[in-house]
Image (tube, rainbow, N blue to C red; front, top):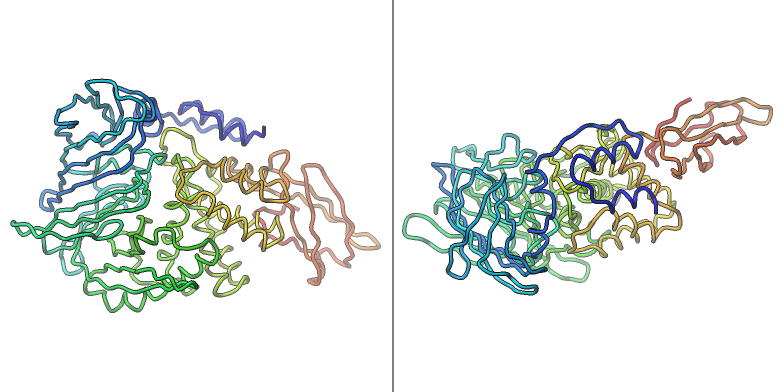
Length: 550
């Protein structure tokens, strides 16, 4: 069993896990401590692992003047083990009014941002039941959405109310009661929002009905027919205008495209959002059909940059294209419908699976429409944003929000790019990429599952490459010495700053006419190359993530 396998399969509580992670892979340990609250949030203890959520029925009433919400959530669950007590989650600044079960008010105890519900009798293995949790309060406000979780209470340019929420990392339990762990997605969900009738309420899935109430309010009811992770559940209120388009795929299947934008941006949006259909065609080419076909594809304009809310993608990029001619937010957040929403990790520490693949899909979008050279330019821009401050993999079981580092995006994208070029077989690479997505679609998965699945499909051992990039902060460095000889130039080379069995190849160009592939190890090797001068031999750093030291 490799060190990577051991790391991925080992469950070590909070601080000790992180310390061992750091020491095991040659890093200076960062002494990060975790609280009891961190473990309650991130760890599947016996009071969470004993049940499986089947459906949420969330009812929310939004009071804008007081910046508060009230409502209830009906939680349908199935017992995976016999139990008499379960853990649910709701931030401690929100008040729980009651927890009702079969007409009874159950006792509950709060601790940190969790609460424990006790049943009057043992719930048996296989039993199905539902709880109603009534609550109210002022949910935390985001200081820097979407990176800081919370509600966003603001106004549009006409000074009309514009409200949203984003909670990835921080947790959906900042605004509604649930089992707030990525490993447990409901199979379906209903979201009902009561708000002033001057606004439109937009949420996930399909709009099923709008009910006019007697006090200048309306109730908007949305239904999600696929599994959905908690942080993807959203709420948007504004003076929206609405329009619809259609994407027709190569099999002539029709996907509704629903757009909710601030009413004064309708004309602008109708032109700008035309690129959505081309993006969907690209992703279908590489991965398969849009994963939430029955719920449709939706963009909703938000007062923050963007977020991959399932079938209700938050869009706030002000209708701007980048220098490559596309809207980054549309492409990146839509890529998360595949990587992040259809394929979802079980632990926050493994969000690289969401972000690395989604970020890499941006370069494939460029390649699909503009060619590989242009895609390489895009990747080179991503490379400039790699920090190498933290390993891409974080500590398990503590929901360590500060692990949300840029390297899970850009270094992860370059890891995938490097693996593609390690294979040196694009046909195989694209089969592997699609097979990985299709294998894990609608599942909650681990790093171990993804890494070993891809490794099994590859003719070379990919585990050391994954281990290097996921678990260390070291940049693979090729130590090179050149010596002029009568018949050419001798190159001595070996890897530094790598794990012992790191096996990524490198390529060099000779006289700009042909390439040579080298397979460095941590032991020095030599090769004699036919060149008159040293500067006629160049190491290609476009294909792999490494540095050359001479």
